[in-house]
Image (cartoon, rainbow, N blue to C red; front, side, top):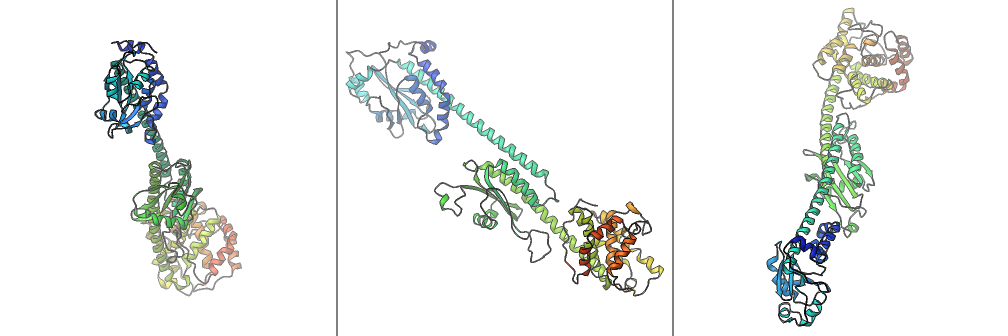
Length: 580
């Protein structure tokens, strides 16, 4: 049996004199990590409240848990006497929501301490009986028996095992425990909020870094699929999905224009373990109505739902449409969290941001493609109008353009530059619009005056096109495609390297097609004769490097001029850069 508790007024002395209660409170600090975990685990349904745990350790006594709202004893641990705990629960109702302990029973030589709990335990109170003085054999337990509903013999037996507590000191200690538990809870909240903020900042940083990398690659010369491949590789690093897939939808119908460079069938890009085909992604997106939504859809399936789904290998997913305005260009899908966890708003927002950028980029590319195809149609119509002036030269401009592309390709020109070469070939004779039909279709030899009139077509074409922005490289070809390597050509008498490179290419293509075609004043030349003329003119009339390229691709060129029907060659995008 411990020594009787002596009332003290000084709290510091109280901590020293009370049988080791302050050391127990310090001991509770040593298990603060456990208390913080308990506070954080309330939402997960853990039974031990941090205040309750501290009370047990400080008072060295078990505590019952009373639901004050329902007047029911929720938990009565072993070691507590069989008191009327449901009555105590009813008596504790005024304590709900308060942060102050009270003595709900005070009958010498015991009291019942009640301490309100917080959080999800807000309606509950922790209660335990305390001995207020050391018991004597002559003690009368009658009043205590009435107040607690417990037999006198049981109370006396219980008292023999207890140490005495001064009621006021017990209240003060309980207050300190509540305060300590409150600060532990606040510490747990702050740590949780700090972790959440750190995670959020990290996610925001990753998202900003990813979006920055994407925007650095936003160029019209880069296709949407090229940008998407880069985005998928980068996203795989931060989204933590086992598989990522991006389905691009067709933007044109191949039946309407067999030569179109636009995407005419679905194209699926994926990284990691992505279990769906293009058709399955399209059906899934239609079923989820992604195109009608303004944001991402997140679905985390329960273990019961997964086996019943169409794809039981998919545990969870995020889906979002790639859109721009009213146009849907595709669907983005991330499947199966890599750590077996669930997808949340962080991953969904990241996919949505990337999908938005891809949608804008795809929209810009599609608009640019449509404008390029419109320009291509205008150029074709213009070249057809030129060729129509002379039935003998029908298809000449297109053949020259395609031959020039073969030559430039052999010379190492980039795909972007080849589009400019093709355009220059189509327009090289646009100035013949200003030449009299009678001269163009004259069956006999031209007079010197008539020849001088025809020689004006390069400068006439240059004037026609000079007002068009972004065609400066093409207009130079139109002006100089009749210049000679030795400087004897027209209109400016340029020689050698001073002649624009593409003009030298078009000059060879133009000369070959003229010699390989039937004209009003002569028949088509044999191939052997044409080859002899080209070899003889290398270094004189034509650039020797271009003549060498001609003989490298001669067989392909001959197929173009020998074809009975004109092949439809689609003009690719007209690059805003890449001028030659």
